[in-house]
Length: 297
Image (cartoon, rainbow, N blue to C red; front, side, top):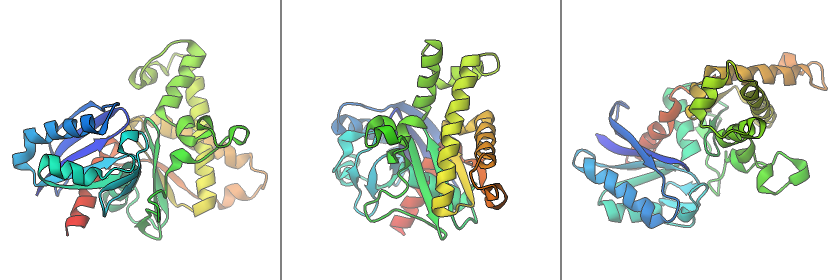
């Protein structure tokens, strides 16, 4: 079985032809339309039409509160035009094939739990750093969706008491790749992309300071997640997770938080592994494939 697999994010739509062994035959990406669902659906159709004869259906991860059973997006997340839209049915009609949807954070959790860094865990999470912050929770050996499909939506957690309820206080705006680059721009006065940022780290003091602050904010949220859910392991996902220096810095900041705790025995009892996601940027596509298999079977 081959599927056309999509990972639709706020910045770009990644796509691949994939089989049940998770082998990728073709891959690419296009910019994500910003204006309308119709434009979004046309992009999906244009890509699928080029490979459709080889693929029995479409598996897609995307942001928002996604009802996988109904193929409905109840909250659009970064793609607001998808809000309260039967995205699955509309894409099926346009593309003429079976379409299965899953939230992007939950897709990453499915992939990492089934085949990757979180395999064998009872309580664990993925923390996907991208345009926003995606999340997926594994509790008692199952990926949690929640009654309203919003479990694990880390982006909406408020972390600034002084601005509670405002967009600037949301974890998605503080712990995203966008936030890291904004911090650098505020310090240096220069706007650059993520690839350029990590190339500058060795000799750029502004980059070092931005990464230091960014990793500290992520470590604080891992600390909070630990106490809420007694997590064994947390996998850092998204393209940025390929940067070993980021994972090392988050671990360093987490140890500092423990050592500075107001209860001195906390560092001795807290045990949580912080690791890069095994599948990096491909986790969402692999998780979408798994969701398709489960739905069809």
